[in-house]
Amino acid sequence: MSERGTDRADDPDRIDGLARRAQAGDREALEMLLGTVRPRVLNVCRGVLPYTPDAEDACQEALISIANKVGTWGGRGRFTTWMHVVAVNAARSTYRRLKNQAQATDQVYLERPDPRTTSVIAGTRLDLLDAMDVIEQSHPQYVQPLLLRDVYGLSYEEIADQVDAPVGTVKAQVHHGRRMARPLLRGQE
Image 1 (cartoon, one colour):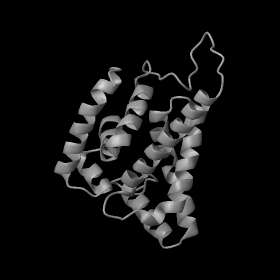
Image 2 (cartoon, rainbow, N blue to C red):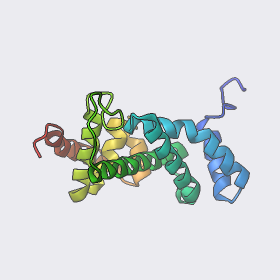
Image 3 (tube, one colour):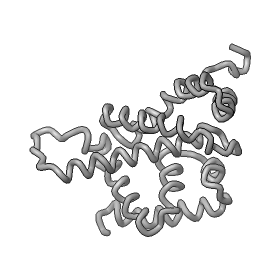
Image 4 (tube, rainbow, N blue to C red):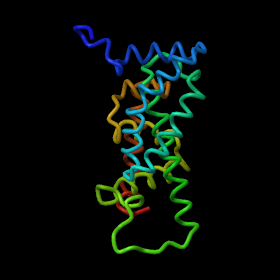
C-alpha cells in the first residue's frame, strides 16, 4: 500500500478505473469491480431493508443491474455515487415486491414483530419508503435527491452530478421533497 493509501481496494480512483475498463468490455475488470463494490452495495441495501436476507437479495439485484448498466455511468461523478443510486433503487424495488407479497397473502401475526416488516428504528424507515412511494406518484423528481441526501448523506454536489442537475435545483428538490414527506410520516396523508 502506498503512503497515501491509493492502493486500497476501495479507493475511489481505483474503482473509477475498474469501471472505465469494464465499460470498455474488460470482463476481468467487471468481476473485480463487482467484488470491490459489493460491501458498499450491501450496506446501502441494509440501510433500507433491516432484515439481512432481504438486504442480500436487494444487493444481488443491484450487482446484476450494475453489471448490466455499467456502460450508462457517465464518468463525470464518482462511480460509487452512481452505484449508490442503483443500490437504493434495487432496495426500494425489493421493498415494494416484499410489501406486495405480504399484502397478497393472509399473514399469521406472530407475538414477536417480523424483522422484515419492522424497522430497527420503530418503523420509521418503512414509513419513509411508503412516503417515497406516495411522493413518487406525483413528483418523482423529488424522491431520488431526498433519499440520497437524507438517508445516505450524499452531498448536494454528488447528487447534482448523479441526477445531472444544478446544485440549486437539487437543494430545491430536497426541500420540496421534505415538505411533502413530513405529513406523510406523521400519518396525515
